[in-house]
Amino acid sequence: MSKLEKHEYEVDLQWKEGRIGILSSDKLDDRIEVATPPEFPGGIEGIWSPEHLYVASVSSCFMTSFTAVAEYSKLSFEELTVPATGVMSNESGKYVITEIILRPTLTISDESKKDKALRILQKAEEICLITRSIKTEVKLEPNIAIAAFN
Image 1 (cartoon, one colour):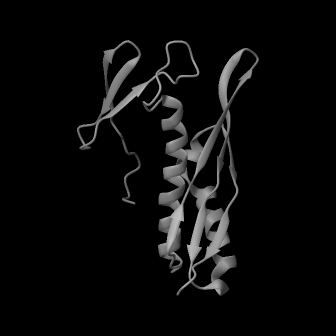
Image 2: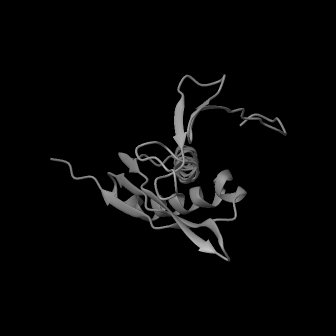
């Protein structure tokens, strides 16, 4: 990371119709259609919602934090998947995402590195800047798999 004290990430949103908008950024190639989730009145199925993006920001931050720490720690791995679930509940009449559960599965080829891999997964959750920036509780339920070579 550079030595700048401040970074900015600009996102533009253009309303399309109804409860649908288009996210974009001058710095990125892709555009993302977003809408109210189907669980709410007027919600739309099949389109990313702010709730999905919120959970995705935690999951993707975990992944990038993990890969940085794994590289620094010289831990090689075969595969990493990070299923994540955001739990929304009604607290005092207001909906909030109360917890995000990360269930990463890390596949390594060297079983003797299992403890090290687990420590790095835990460290990644601790240093993730998105997790540190939110009040939602993030729970880590890691799984380490050993690659089977034929």
